[in-house]
Length: 217
Image (cartoon, rainbow, N blue to C red):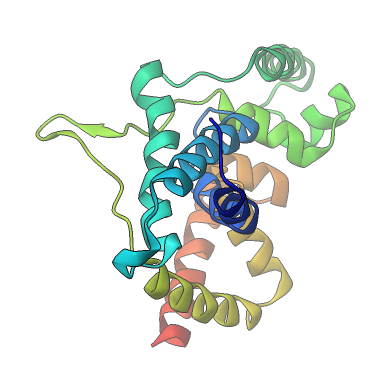
């Protein structure tokens, strides 16, 4: 793809849009690098097709293109796949998990698995989470279920309000939200990291979300 100087500038100045879109798909079985690469292709296509004379903001035009390329990974790949290196690490962690289960006579925590594998606990959690069944992007009734896209300006306003609300939470509540929604970990994996049960995480998560709703309103 050959870009003009103006198109290159659009791409360079809007890489943040790719990161924002790619983060929506974290924890669904595909490595972030692959998500970002696909999103970058969408950004380049948007830059090449954008016409400023129509009066639209570039972000309004680019976001659907970026998300379209990212979702293509899931459409074209059928079952969600993870990279070979990550898959090998994940398989090793599952083997360690089985060994610890036999040694301890119980289900090991993520922390115990990470320690045995000599990995950072967050990396271990992400790898194990990536091997879990991914959320389907289709429903049986209507076929493909496209993820709704909010207008970028409205999304930015909501994002700033949400960031302010999250800033009013205590450190433990922010960590739980980060694990669940930024890293995309399951409640069970989050519970292992925080030393809680899945039920406790579920209850705490509901309390935090209700508090955020109150703050946002």
